[in-house]
Image (cartoon, rainbow, N blue to C red; front, side, top):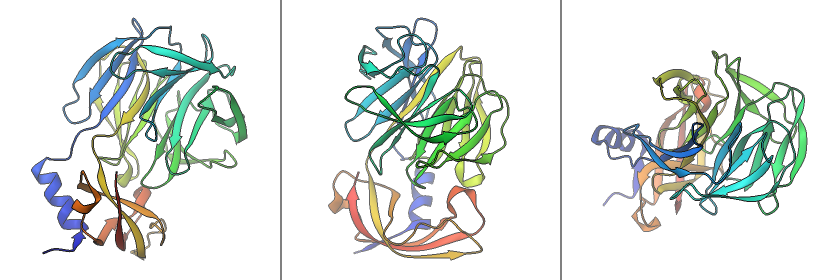
Length: 304
């Protein structure tokens, strides 16, 4: 009986068999303010239902701790909202009061909902999910139109719409570090997909993009001609086996290997932690698209 999971073998089996469970992306079609669900495997768009209010230039985010879909609008009522992902019906939590607050990103490791405004030299904000009130934290120099949290690499990311540049954001100071010199995007939504380890982006020009994080955030155009959409959130496609890193060694110059004590989310699907192999060992690509690889060993921690 196997007692450990060899990363390269398992990842290859899952990919070739095509059994990685799809997640769902949620966005808002601006014509009629309709909540739309997107299957990340088939890329099929399905109308869920109309919102209760006008969605003017805002963001969406999925809070995985409570399975809640949140929205902010930076114009209109300038408030935080909850949206029913089954019907599209929305309800206001409370006002944030910040003009052009367009982006939301949920840090699942620290249980913090972040927000950003599409204005240069504005704070990074934390959002009170009970009242909608925001608290400034540091300053972001570029104007960001959206946010997304990469849970595998523990980093907050945002795109400067217009320029299309992708930045990594320091969650304490707001300092922005360029990670991808992009091309034009127009009022977009951004979401991290942990199943594929990619970023998705949709914009007002009706385009759907995909960023390959492991390949230096290389961007490809997946679909065009979709009509104006804004806001994007990923709701997980299924639980995976998570491991506590016990040993981590960089190979080939990788500078971003997960440290000892960090959590690693594998591609192995599970419904109960007992279904996960007790130990993990093998080699992974250097996180954030860096050079080299990481040799890691870990111990079974959870299924989620």
